[in-house]
Image (cartoon, each protein chain N blue to C red):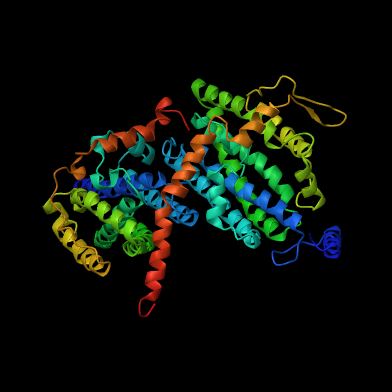
Length: 252
Length: 316
């Protein structure tokens, strides 16, 4: 493979791997704390899937010349992460968690669909299984949105508050972390087009749930795709590395 | 008062080795003993998720994180399955999931002493799998032959999963044992912390009235002391093979009987901890369950309301 192509693929896959890992990590924070035991199990399975997807992408990156998956996760400084700041935000209450996860799942499906256009067979092979699992994740959080929207006054109130808190953090989710020319060369839709597709999917759902549309997502003031993160990411990484740092090069 | 003739027939069934199903008639004492046992077992699985849960975000490799996350999820799953059984048995008393969980917050149901203890290092996360799950396999294997068939069936799956957990714990422990000086001493300290709680785990040498009745009803089949001896016999060589020591100078096996001598755990201290939730981490762990159960109650109510609402829609 040409070096330019290899580098483009690394830049393409890194934000996806990082999104999935951070989503999985944040999800694991609910372990043992979900509103019902049955949901605890489902929620945990979903987030183990996400970490599994991240591992697939990190291995792909490793095959393309990046460090091994554990080094990517445990040895990269915050500014080298390319996840959206959107996914690094603390969970908040159940309503905020549901809103954030629903927004992410819709985007993730659009992104995965777009990725099938990239002519790199190892990526395409992995996508099939991932897409199958993500279809369930989307359904799960769609159902939760519907339940909370129809769940009476308190749920409604919390859902509105969650939307108000989560919405302004949306903008950097939609980026690929690539230049325009590179995006086109890989056969991918622009970030703008992804965002429009997302609005076309989410807006009618909001109408059916009688949720008022909080305006189209604002534009970015920070950008995780360029390594500009909130302090929440460093905090998360410090927690994640607390044990490993006791003996960074020893087997664990 | 139960019909004495039916009670006698019931006991004869147990004598013949018959298994009891949820829909069979049973004396109320049998039902109550089962509820007490299964409720406590289920809640212990759930409370047992917390000491390890805190290490999931900090797990030192991707594989360890996935494995530990899956293990903790399994424990919650065991709790869920066991509570379903306890809910079935509690139906005549009109008590469901909410009530059984309220009991945790109100201190009306006990959970295993080991889950009242602190797990201050990553090594504790491994040692819990290695020793606690290893101990749980020994007690649960005895319950596989329980006279209450639904419990025995469920335990089949649980024991199979616990044996994965034990292997997971053993693998964490092995890595630390082969690691740096700091890793090894972290491991030795964790072993030192968990040995005495594990001696208490199997219960007093002289079993209480409830445990004796459970033997008579064949809900359980071995005494506390028999279980503890099995555990010591299995783990002393394993721990020593790792080049580690056990914090009990009295540990010695009688070559003639094969029985182990050991220092008694501080029975009073542990008994009080389990009864009053006064252990080092009892209140912190109950606070986590309170967060899930009470602070998220609005979510369960929303689901109930929404389900009613959506069922009323045309086409539903």
